[in-house]
Image (cartoon, rainbow, N blue to C red; front, side):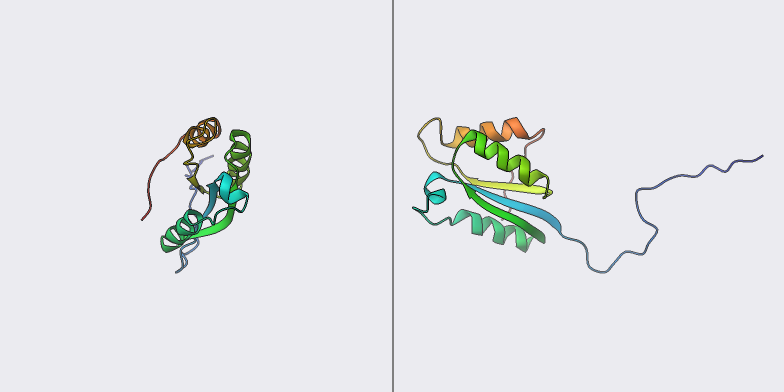
Length: 119
C-alpha cells in the first residue's frame, strides 16, 4: 500500500478577501488625576486616533489609577481581547506611583515588551 506524504498548512486554501482584517488594539491610560475626573485624558484619544490611522480596530479604552495591582489586572484582562495593548500616562513623580509603577506592572505581565511609537 502506498502512502502519499501530505503537508499541512496553517493558511486557508480559500481565496483572499479584498479587505484585510484589522488587528485589534486596546488603549489604557494610567493617570490618578484623570481616573478621578480632575483632568481630561488627552493622550488616550490621541493614541486611539494614531492606531486607527494605522488600521487597528480599537476594542477597548480605559482610564485607571496609577497602582501596580490595578495596572496588572487591567493589562491581563486587555491581553485576552486585543492583539496590541498600548499604555499611556503614568508620568507622575510621587513614588510608588509614577513611571516606575507602570513599568513594573508591564514587567510582571508581559513576556516581551516593545517600547515603540506610532506616529
